[in-house]
Structures are given as structure tokens and as C-alpha cells.
Length: 139
Image (cartoon, rainbow, N blue to C red; front, side, top):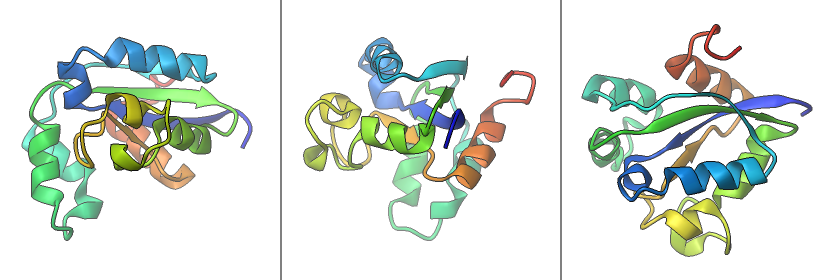
């Protein structure tokens, strides 16, 4: 899709490891424009709401605990075919299975501590962008 927007989150493990700048540089090198960005620490209620789609899954509790363990950096990214392009740049969810050079292969530790989140579809991207950013912040 032409000139599409998506949401990404640099997760607490990557922020804690001081890899956020490297990840942002890699995203820009992949042709993404950072439209909006902020740094914050999610509350348990916020993380629970954001990941509510996973609440029946066995990893939900540990995911919420991890995502509240330190600051995150959510960003709105824009480029042609942004959602699919971000998914390729991130790599497989499990860093051990991610392609060489992808963000998760370079900076992820395991399937949960995998450095980055990215929206998986246009409808999801719209909801996730609105969760973190007002229309004014998204330009």
C-alpha cells in the first residue's frame, strides 16, 4: 500500500541495552520516516489493555510484566507498504529463527525479549497508533 503508516514499539530490553538509537537508524535506513515518537513506561493497566488480544494465551502475564519492566519507545512509521516492510525489517518473532541482519536477530534475546513490536495489519495499526498517539501527534 502506498504511503502507509504503522506502529512500532522498541521494547524495554532494547531500551535498557541502549540499542534504541541503532534500531531507529536501521528503520530509517529501511526507508521509514518517523512521524511520531515518545518514551514512556507502561502501567500494568495500559500494557494489559494494549495486549488484551492475547489475554487467553499462556504468555499474557509474562508479556504484561515484561512490557511494564522499563521504558518503551512507541513510534508511528510511514513509507510505502509500511506494515509488510516493518515485519520484514523486524524478522521472525523468535530471534533464533530471524534472518541475519533483522532487528530481532541483532538485538533480541528470546521470543519475548525480542527488541521490537510491529503492527500486523492495517486495522491493527490504526488501533495501535491511536492507543499511543492523538491525531494531532500523528500529523
